[in-house]
Structures are given as C-alpha cells and as structure tokens.
Length: 403
Image (cartoon, rainbow, N blue to C red; front, side):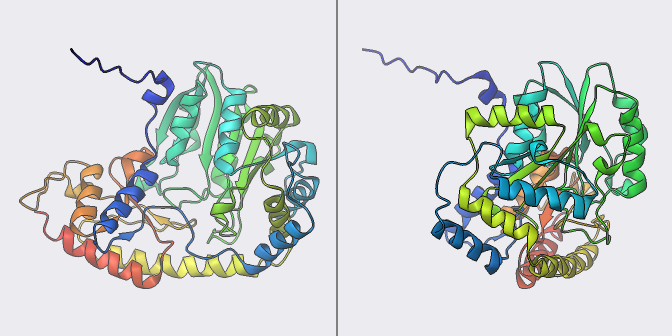
C-alpha cells in the first residue's frame, strides 16, 4: 500500500513572501548559542536599554486605573491628543486627532497603509537601502516595488532626480525612512525639500515617511518631509515608540495622515487586530508628554558607540565605512572581499560574507541583500561597548583569513 504525501495548500502570497532576514539571522544566532557557542548578535534593531521607569510606572498606574478593556480602533483619545501635540512640537505638523491612528507597532501602520492604498499593479517607489519589510509589505498589498538605490559614495541617499526618473503613470506611493534603517543616513532639509518638489508635481502620488528613528538623530534637528507645504496634504508620517523610548516589546506605533487615509487604516485595522493595548497607550501618551531626558541620554550613548564602531571598522582593510548621522546602524561596503576564500569557504556575495562571520567569528550581522544593497552588511550597535569591541575584533580576525 503506497502512502501519498499531499503538498500543503498554502496561499501564493505566503509562498512568494521572503522571511525577514533580520529575524532569520537572529534565530540562527540563537541556535548557535544553544549549541554552546559564544555568539554576539548585532543583527536586531532593538535598543539594549530598558524602557525608562517613568513610562513603566505610567503603565502600572493605567492598569490600576482600569485601562484593561478594548480601546477604540484608532486609539484612546489620551494618546491621540499626545501625538497631536508631539507632531506640532517636534515636527511642525498639524494633524487633528481624527487624522491619527495608533497601531500595534509602526510595521502594522505601514501594512495598514499599503493594504488601504494599493491596487494590484500600483507602483511604489522605495528608496534603497530600505528597511527589510518594505518590499514584502508592498507586494502583500498588491503593489509593485520600484527600488531606486544610492551607494556609499552618495551616503546611501537617493537624489530627487532619481525619484523623478522613476515616476510613471502607475506610481502611487514613495516610501522611505529617515533616519534610515539600515544605513543610519539622514536626509537633510534641502534633500527632502527637493524630493517634495518632485512629488508635488504629481497629484496622485503620496509619500510614506517612516520616522521611527527620529529621536536617534545626531544632526541636531530632525526634518519631516510632511512639513513642506507642497506635500503636507499628501504625506503620511509614520512613527512609534520602540526605538526612541526603548519600547520594542510594547508594540505601539502611529500615523498622522490625511483624514480619508486615516479612516481607511482604521477600517483595515478594525478587521485585523482592533486597537492596541489600553495600558500601553496610556504609557505611550505619558512618554510623549513627560521627561525626555532618558531618550536624550540613549541618543548620546548611541553616538559614542557609533564613534567606537566606526573607528574600529575603519581599521579593517578594504572595509568602506561612511559616517551615519542617525539610528544605531552602520552599513559597511565589503564588496572588496567578493571572490576571496579562507581555503574552505568562498565569498561570492554579502550573504556568504555574513554566514562566514556567523560560523567563523560567531558574530551575527545582516546581509545587505535584504535591504536592497548587495555590496554591504548591517551592524546594529545597540549593544554594550564591550560586546561591540569584542565583535569587531572577531570580525577583523576572521576577514584577515580571506585571500
């Protein structure tokens, strides 16, 4: 009697979707650690700081006050009012509370937007290097990612002319982050104004500006593209609490958008998750309107770590390293090592390079191919100075064997 094996009847959308490279590498590092190896993981974009005490205390008080029930889908009025105040205070953005939607993380906010705005075949211009999930979220929404890329020689920043050249009659959105994950690059006022001017000439195109790293900005002043009058009514500003307040596990993000887009996102979210946790929202409202000293201290710590990592990486032969102005990443170009070998492993691309570092240096980093930049890899310096020094020493030793 023969046994018939039936192939799982998975949907095309899941079969075609790529796994998150950052999550995959983090799991590989955990697996290696479980085998007894001393692995240093610099793969996840997660601050190593704990959530500040005054924010945790606000959540505890909210629980005591009975904030344990379902919330309105777009968010409690308390947090939406706080976000409205924050937008005006920090970004010169005028959003009313009915233009603000609170979600279970900025990632859900971006998914809500793509599911709300894209029809099959609509094109989305993505500025690369890009955050790993943009590409797959756009495809999940039926959109066609149109990737335009800048290399390390351009500080990984796409020009307004590149955006203009990529626009077609199918373009629906322009999507990018600043400060940028994975590069740490920050678009200047003039660079954003030039992109805004290009988009303003096309009334059917909207901008999604991911500003989750706003508070980790070493330039002195964050600029929101939605503050330019030419595109203020066609920009959706995405932000959240995970990076600037070390609240990754709280899953709390938000958007400010034209009212009709906010209503659409609320409609989508109402069918998927409904509102974010009540006590978490109260803590988020407190975070935005109370003492920001812990956030500023975290930024100062990240700046010091950046300098350490930048200097140490610059000592490794054939590593090209720029000067990122925000976030907590550095994105070396290691294409000079393509075609080299340690005698056992040949390095053909960034994927090979990162796997080589994991297995030979026991350091977990993320391949640039996941971010649309095949010549690079991403290091997260959201780790202790001791871990960073040790990890880069191991990287230096491992690559010295590549000839």
